[in-house]
Length: 120
Image (tube, rainbow, N blue to C red; front, side, top):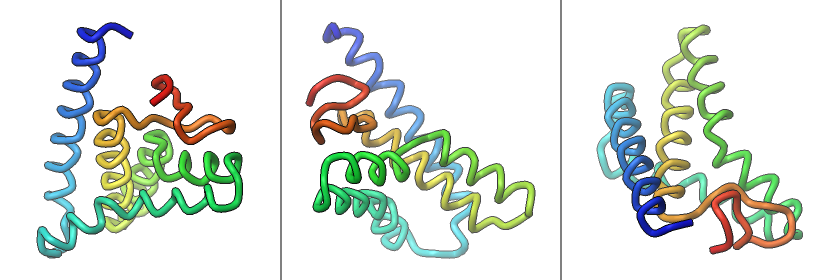
C-alpha cells in the first residue's frame, strides 16, 4: 500500500473515530469522561485469547473489533429501545476505527501481526 493511500485510510479512520466519539457523547448515560476513556480500551482485553493459541486469539479479538458486530449491537439497542446496547455498539465501533487508524486490523489465524490491513 502506498504512503499516500495509507494516509488517506488513516484520515478516514480518524474521522470515523471522531464521529463515533461524538455519537457516544450523546449516549453517555451520565458517566464522566474519564470512565469513557477507560471503557474505550476495554475491547483490547480480547487479546487475552492469544494466551490459548493464535486461532482462538484471532476469533476473540475479531469479535470485539468487527464494526459489523458493533453496528448490529447499535441496531439491537435502537429496536429494543435500550440505550446501553447502543452505547456498547458505538463504543466498539469507535474503538475498532481507532485501532484501524493505528494500523491494527482484524486478525488472521496464523499470527497476531497478520491483519486484513497487511502485516504489521
